[in-house]
Length: 76
Image 1: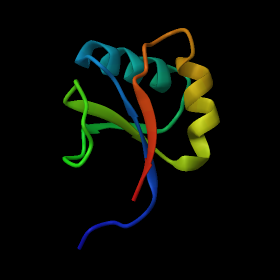
Image 2 (image 1 turned 90 degrees about the vertical axis):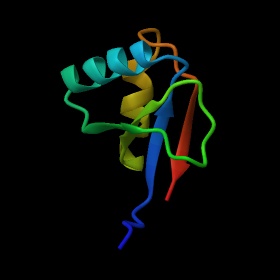
Image 3 (image 1 turned 180 degrees about the vertical axis):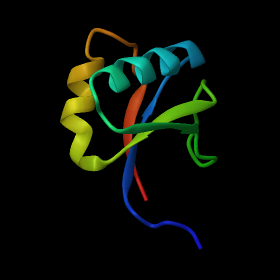
């Protein structure tokens, strides 16, 4: 059975950006998970960061100026 809980993802142009973002967000104590980019999303990078919708402002603030973000999307 598939989990239908809404979540958000941060997409990147390179794996190195995703890895740096993971490090930055974990250092800030923001709960995230590095996952493969969902098949229905086009991205230049094969991994993205999954997080809860209520953490969006914290994620955006932590990554601003620290990592090149391609897009942030809401998914279900």
